Structures are given as structure tokens and as C-alpha cells.
Length: 264
Image (cartoon, rainbow, N blue to C red):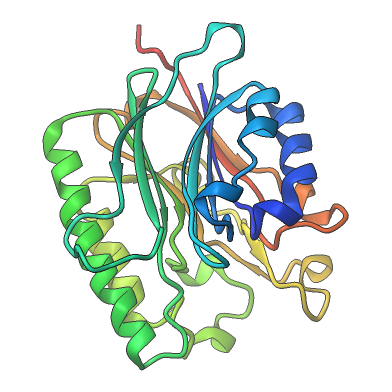
């Protein structure tokens, strides 16, 4: 079973690229971030025509997350479990959605960027992270097989960034952000990409400026974390790097995990 995460950076502008990637790689589940589209503007008909049943949480111009489940040839329909991250009823930003797909709980998230830091946006990032800690612990405690995936806007280590000295004051690499990520990992999650590529320089995001992709001046901020119940089923993980090099791409590349699932 293949589960992928892809910050699409505007589903309206990137729909052809998204459909091409879905057709080529056929992930069983695709989690999308930064839809940048209100609920009524999500291209449901096109996604269904591609063989996927979508659940989405839209927002005008900003944010937005979706879970697409491949339902062609009788694949299981996704069952929505949670919309919005618990812990702040006044938070209206569309950054989190959960669904059950084929016996796995799939959580799709778009963690706040937090720049400029310090400042109110960075404070919001850390508060959102604290709420994520609470929800992630509940998921761990449930004993369910869970994948917690998306754009975390966190560079975990120096191995995950080109020229780390240039990022020391950025919200994605500040000590507070990395500490919050480490606190999450300490609950017992497995970083699928790093577990399968422990020492490899591997990125998931390249800026549009200064030929960052051509120079491979990237960062790794898109993560798929597996719960203790799911981690033993990990087979492989990777990044569809070539997608970033296509015409009018997102600044992220799809990142995926392959699981030996359903469990035997």
C-alpha cells in the first residue's frame, strides 16, 4: 500500500500536474496541502474521474488539506474521522483532516510556517504544534495503525538542509521548532523517509528562486510519521523528485511510503 503526501501549492494552478502524477504513480492514498481554494472550488469531478474519492477541508486563498483515496477497481472509500485539529475552537485555518482508509488512520496536516520569527506567527506555530502533540499522543495511545503526514514546515536536522548556516534564524529551523518536532518523535513515531535512508541527503522542497532545484539547494520538510502499530509494516519510502522539475511545478515534490498492508 502506497501513501503519499504532496504540498500542491495551489490545486487550481497545479491540477494538471497533480493528475499526471496520480496517473503515473497511482498511490493508494494521497494527502495534499496548500489547496489555496475554498470548499466549493475543489475540483471534485476531476479527482473522481482520475479514480480517487476525495475528502477536503478548503479555505479561500490560503491553506487547505485533502485526503484522496484510490477507489477505482473497488478500492475502499475514505471515512472522515476528524476535521480541524482539536484544542482551539476559534482556529479557523484549514490545516488538518483525518480519515480511515483500508484499516489505517491517515492524518493529513499543514503545520504553520511561523515566519517571521520571533513574532505572532511563530507563536501560533508553536501553539499549533502543542495541539498536535496532544492529538498525536491520543492516536499513539489508541493503538491504531496511523500515518501522520504532511508539510510540517520543520527541518529536523542539519542533514535535512542545504547550507544550514543560512537557516539559523528561519522559523523552520529555529531550536524551538526542532525541539517541538523531537518532542513529537519521542512519543514513538517513526520517520519513514529517514528510517529507510538514514544517512542520505534527501530533500522535499526547493525554492523557486536562485535556481534552487537545479543546484539541489533544498530542505526536507514533508514527513510521513508511522505509529508503533504501523512501523513494522514499512517497506520503503522515497521522494518523486522529478515532479519538481516539470513545467509549472509546486515547490514541493511528492513524498511517499510503501507499506506491507493489509497486514497478513
